[in-house]
Image (tube, rainbow, N blue to C red; front, top):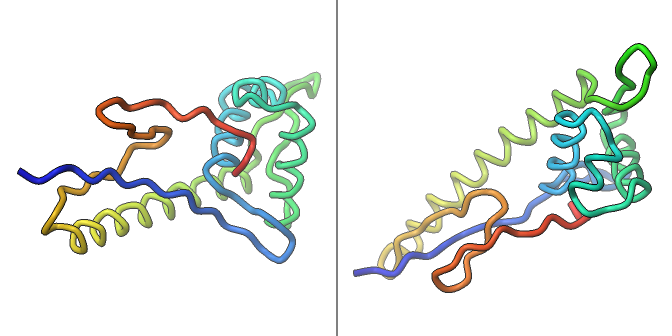
Length: 139
């Protein structure tokens, strides 16, 4: 019986202006959209508001357009604007395709020795126990 080889990857995109998007920034944008608050999204990821705001600003510079807009009648909180939603969708689709390709390639390369399994998002495998990876401020 072959052992299982668990595969994961950390990839990101950047332009000459700086980092655009990676898994951490993707999660930050998802949380902003879910919670309607950059402060709450930052707290959920264990980072300061200032660090989260800086990452958003870096991504906006790389994208060449704002990603967030104020929400509500009193203009408190944030949500992704249409360009931000588009970027998030494009990145998710690209990441899914890259991970599928990586899994197929790993299976082909290591099939003699292992059964290959791509790990789901946010997991690390140590021995027989899967641990949820704590999100850091990095993307």
